[in-house]
Length: 76
Image 1 (cartoon, helix red, strand yellow):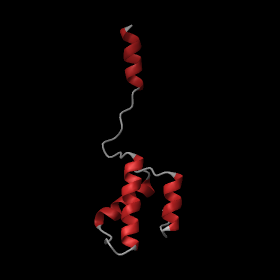
Image 2 (tube, helix red, strand yellow; image 1 turned 90 degrees about the vertical axis):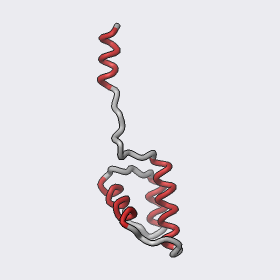
Image 3 (cartoon, one colour; image 1 turned 90 degrees about the horizontal axis):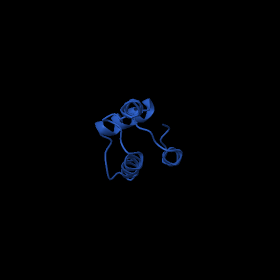
Image 4 (cartoon, helix red, strand yellow; image 1 turned 30 degrees about the horizontal axis):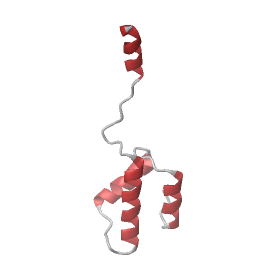
């Protein structure tokens, strides 16, 4: 019986520390994009880092979020 649990444990994959829940990140990132468009916020270093992480695949965003970013003028 213990062997089965060990086998099961071998299949458990823990997320990386820098993985963010997609819906939370998407919401915050889209809000930031809108604020930048409306000149209520400035492009900062973190914004550039987030874009690079989206492009590299560290941060995953949904099709709908990508579509909304295109509507806002961001080609990511």
